[in-house]
Length: 243
Image (cartoon, rainbow, N blue to C red):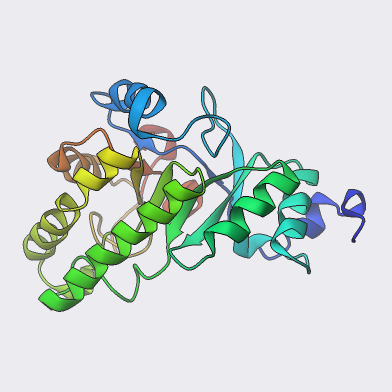
């Protein structure tokens, strides 16, 4: 087995574009309710993937440029000083992941919905939207099965139509996943990313968070928040103001 103690942080994150905090920025109205509910009933506990009480340093599995098994990769991430890791969902084996977590004593705090760029909630094709919904639901089920607490979601793409139309399509589609999110205690963490929706991609660096806030609030659920990626945001406005 590799000697992971010799892996430097620079080597470990070589090629990584950005690191993201594991906990989504929830709307203030709902955050405490969701956390309490997850801890007491629907969600997983701290022995699994839950990371409570502060910001933690996590990374995506694709950033681990270390050969070997999933256990090897988890051990490398832990040795490099990370507190958790995100997998692509639903494309993993639950048993394999649970065994790797136990062997490395390292949590999977959440996942990234792996097909959200290609199969979109904003698509004009109703069949594609239905597929996007089922993929999101399966991602939530598998995330719950390994002890994670969030599924990162890109809600769609601005190229799919006028803003009002794609707004409604994505809201209607994601709303159908909310009962399952509540049942499992899984947060849907909407990422700010260069998808030309909820901001003006060609606009200036003085844009506000108003549209993102309105979108999240319209879903009106303690299980929906925003995963704010600072690296994705520099082009559009003040990171501090958005946070």
